[in-house]
Image (cartoon, rainbow, N blue to C red; front, side, top):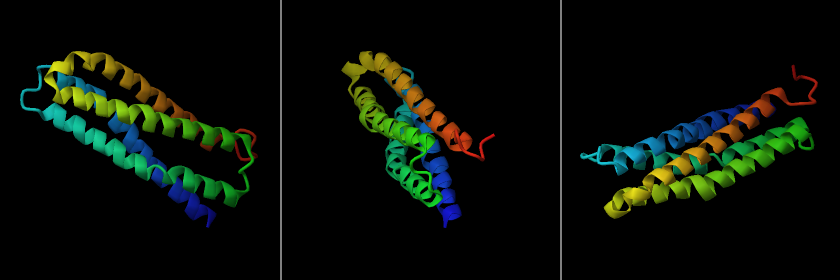
Length: 157
């Protein structure tokens, strides 16, 4: 059962979090392109909208990552280990950042794209969104390293 839980945890993390990191990282570029006059056919705006939908959809699916992670940790008897607790705190931080800053920032930027008079504010918002997405990605990178190295584990290298 532990192997199944761990496999599900890793698969959902790769599929959900991986998709979010890629889509969220690409979003500001297309949103800025759509807000400039260089998108007469609206292709960049459509791409930005699809990237936002990907982020939103996979954010919901991503809730399964800590659920399977906790189940795996319980099966392995490591729920009290410091590396797991730190990973959970970082995961909650990444989730909060996504839900409270990245996704709303994407929505704000999409709203600016649709309102021609507001497009002047797109660049600062896109820059802030790029930074927040980078922080989100770094948090997941740290969690991934903690999951692999597991400091204090007898199996860590």
